[in-house]
Length: 295
Image 1 (cartoon, helix red, strand yellow):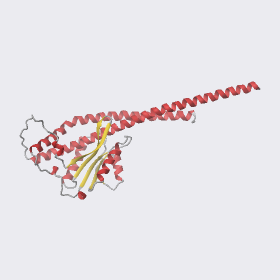
Image 2 (tube, rainbow, N blue to C red; image 1 turned 135 degrees about the vertical axis):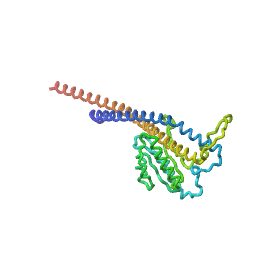
Image 3 (cartoon, helix red, strand yellow; image 1 turned 180 degrees about the vertical axis):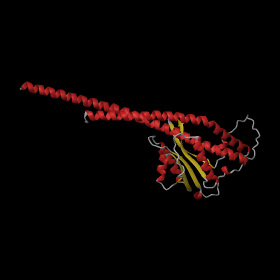
């Protein structure tokens, strides 16, 4: 059994660690709340854009536009696939980063020419060790996601898509289902899928108005779609940011609970060691007293 001083030192060390994990829990809780508020404030605008695209497609079901071009004539082996991978800048978040990396590796296993756009230091370091092309101009951090950053990212991707440098664009991020569950998922950004807009059906009793698109349908979509893509990227950044801190909250809460349990067990061992030491001292005093009496 370890001596009393060693046990006391270990208890103090665990208590110091518990203070850190508890502080990290509180910080992540505050940041997650702020991120959820930012997302709730901006979601209505981008849902409105999605509704407008759905309305245009409902009135013009045979519409042809470069943003809806699936480029089926490009063979699978030659398709240029871009992925925005959103990871954290640091660990201590459970399986958060592992789940995102695992999904991206599944995309990399598909046939095609892959290019990565990494947001987050951990993902950048992980994929830098593999033979995958990474856009070196994409040195973005995941801290404090902003609309300006989302516009920068969407501008780069839209330019490359329109220039034919990319045939497909995906976002790999983590979506927060609720306060205790997050799910890593893949969302296709471009080309747009008609089926993803056809789900927004109007009630049967709602008047289906005639619309006029000025100066042309193409010009209207050229204005709406970039803002829609920016909104999807911004939403992914904020969702990932909230999910990261939610995962870190859960990990830090688990670590704090484990520290409390460990302190409880060490306190029992400490008390037993102290009682054994006291008993030994009493025994030695009694033995010494008896030895003096014999003399």
